[in-house]
Length: 162
Ligand SMILES: [Zn+2]
Image (cartoon, protein in one colour):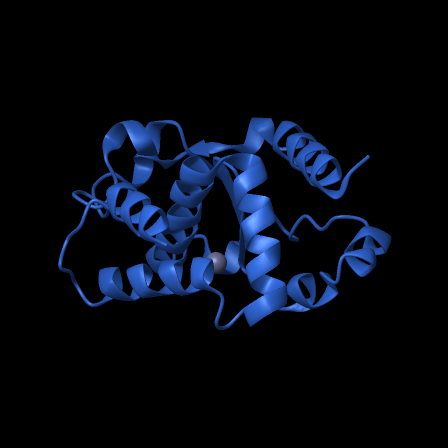
């Protein structure tokens, strides 16, 4: 199996395993009004998990991903589902951040997102990589109270631009 097949399969299994615990993101429609259209929230889910799902260590090591999963990540987005630790379950900024990643997954597709994310991570590191910068910039904009923008549209524009 290629790296991409392994990631896709792991992701599919994770999303299947936690299917019963998934909550629809429409519960966020009021705080995120104007930022995320309701149909976007309706097809997106989140799961609160006691521990972050992590791929097999051997796989992480092979692909230089141990640092990524060693950080204390409180949120992880896999396509249209994101995982949160209980400590950030009520943190709107974290929800917002992960929803930006959902929009990126949608725009780039599974293969496109995973490939680009890993390339950027290798080239720039987590703190400087453009996909994370975009998510942190937008969640900061939300935290600052605006301006209100249609996030999936902004994500599409920024990803098309560069
Ligand atoms: Zn992120």
